[in-house]
Length: 284
Image (cartoon, rainbow, N blue to C red):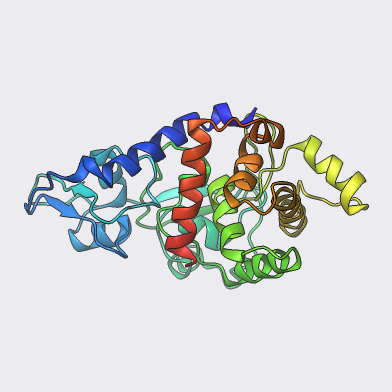
């Protein structure tokens, strides 16, 4: 089941939520601490104090770098001379897009294109090796949490708007769910075998193709087909749960049967809270 491989991520979310409430009551007014304000990101904090995102992640043991909560206290490096992130090399994976790679390593798409003399940012190929300038390596957390600031891809945004609209779903909710599931990366495959942007299980995909959609799709390689299938499935869950948002999301995560039997795992609750927080922050 998918719930077990996400357990560590769920615990990280629960910790973040605790820090945003009682755990932050003793904030220090010190130049070596930064209280998070609305709109802050790790990138903006690192830039303000002339440090790196990677260093802040390690220093604060942050499990969810793309989700900071107002009032959270960020420890700053206790030194006068900041360390600077270096240049690394990255091999393009199937399904990668330049904008996604840029988001993942906390650099701009333009800087990444210029460093590699790429004229067409839509054209990169698997196996191509890219120089990533000034990259802050993401921490070893599930890929859905690896990006260090909000996604920035107008083409993908339009695709989500279209496919969510076809199903009568809130596009922001679908974007947040996909971001938490895969980090908007088509090549991601979970330990349980879930694939693509929407992290569909092969058995679920097969059922949707044969019994719901009535045609074969290429959800394993096509971003469009994967999101089309995922939004259709989410619509079915909304209908089956009487339009209850929490139950629909819980069913997507832990399964419809478990949800309707009255079970709601703690990691499922954290998953739902994180999707809502992500939607509210990135797509209000």
